[in-house]
Image 1 (tube, one colour):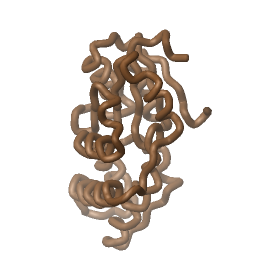
Image 2 (cartoon, rainbow, N blue to C red):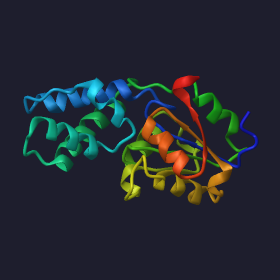
Image 3 (tube, rainbow, N blue to C red):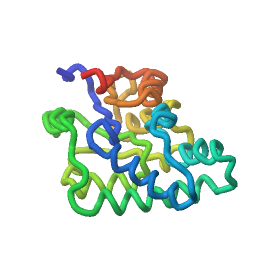
Image 4 (cartoon, rainbow, N blue to C red):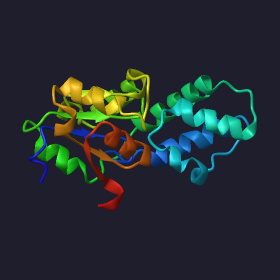
Amino acid sequence: MYDGYEGLIFDMDGTILDTEPTHREAWHIVLGRYGMAFDENAIIGLNGSPSWRIAQVLIAGYQSDLDPKALAAEKTATVKEMLLDGDSVRPLPLIDVVKAYKGRRPMAVGTGSEHAMADALLRHLGLRDYFDAIVGADDVTHHKPEPETFLRCAELMNVAPQRCIVFEDADFGIQAAQAAGMDFVDVRLR
């Protein structure tokens, strides 16, 4: 179905891996330590954003003086422990596309998660070798909805951006794909 593309790029959280519930739970745990709550409906528009950006919004809502980068690091440590312990995360059905194109097309993960976290999680699930490249939030300066994440994926795969297709589950990611001149699949509509 995607044979017309030279490179396939996948968002990770909520697209190929069912990590979203664990991310939300980690936010609840970390924010609870500071007497704050995580309003999922208020934050849903930030899906695909790096943790520090979500932390900025949460802190602003409470008019707190917490450091967004420190809060994000605390959340990242919590979610990493949760995701890498046991089998709390599973691949989503789109992983079948990844498996079908292994060895047939270069593939990359372009995620709002940190590079090391994405690499560790994909290794934990035995999926790392399916991808030629990972571009995480700490690999770019301009995050989704800016196109830098996906443009970097294309560069690492040595594929022209217009010859790539992006699989995404968040508005920011779809905007990033469009800004990069790439076709996309909104997996929420499948």
